[in-house]
Length: 120
Length: 404
Ligand SMILES: C[S@@+](CC[C@H](N)C(=O)[O-])C[C@H]1O[C@@H](n2cnc3c(N)ncnc32)[C@H](O)[C@@H]1O
Image 1: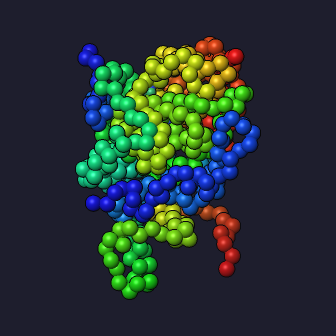
Image 2: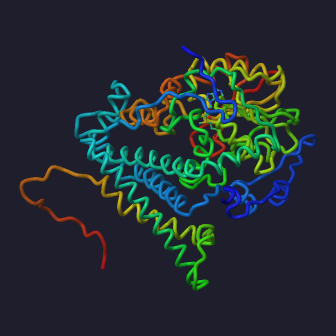
Image 3: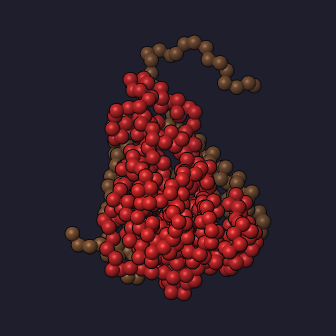
């Protein structure tokens, strides 16, 4: 086997391609692909929402927006905490759906009282 | 185009940062030992360590991956999730205790349970998305990032040594962590590794390299107190290397890694921080340093990524380059019989090891998890002590001292 050497300038060398992007984790490759695409779309949605929060902050302060300043905007410490909490909440609402418990339905509706889940 | 580290005005002088955040320890008179509290970093220190995306949307995308990572870690260990898995195993006639199933079989059992399979799919889809977003950003801005590294390659501060004549062992060239190209195959591997960790994978817990600062600050020093030369093996993006230089600014600090793109980025990052660490593309098992040279050696997450044969060679090579009395702080993943890490020979523990090994693409982790690296250190001649995890977690720090 030839020796593996790296480029003198960039340090880049040949590598062994993995099969990690070929795995199927769910019941069909299509389900896997849908879930992956859905995740990507959710990421785009969040990036847009974050951009809007930046826009709103700048508009509220300056009444106009300079595009370079928009790209360079850094949230304050309080905004960072609040925005991350909003993100975590968004993710929880959407993604917990995928990990819900499921059972085969019985023929008829379940019987027996359940304690109330909350007080009015 | 903007300079990637200057997007939001990065401090130029590390000296000012150290002065603003630290007091000089008195314990070791000979060695300047700067105390930095990773839980309480100053704004200057944060600026110095922060990663800067030129585009808001790229930052937003990684911020999303960070959120998924946080959710996935919390959700998987939630009371209801754990109870659900246990109920599933019991209802399908499996034991919750030790199992004779192989690791792959244990993983296959849990993958029949829809919430586990969905979590696994989300975990790896998020991982792949994170790298995809990162590499697409880097390659779209290729010229800017290449020029940035060009500028610091020679100017420093700190030396950079690439070794095009060195033969890379094949075991180092896999796509570990499912990172496209692995550590060696992409010119931006260093950027991608560091930025995805701090901006996503650590779930926001090490945005300013707090994890590495904590370890470097906790590291014991030789009994004589003098720390003149420090070596960080398998340094990757150099986060630990710079953390040691921040603690011991007068010491000569070296980071070595087999991967050219990693040391190139590590050097670039350290130079931009004005720290002057030295980086070389070298093998930990054949480091080329003189005998009895270093006072402190450090490694974090290296040994589970090498073969057992290489791990043994690394132990004896470090014994050679350390001076008598020198201290090596070794930190790596827990063995698979570590109950604190939620492992053990149960279906859940074995499935976790398999998920990491096969799906986080850690080809050498499986053997490592069952082997005994502290034993190899003893066999190489070291006095070995296991200490509590300086991060408060389950990765014990192992101290190997070369007898005087
Ligand atoms: C998980 S990373 C280490 C992280 C790093 N120590 C830190 O503090 O963040 C593992 C690194 O070890 C390097 N590596 C693997 N085998 C090596 C060897 N035999 N010699 C030197 N470096 C090696 C890889 O290229 C990779 O960059």
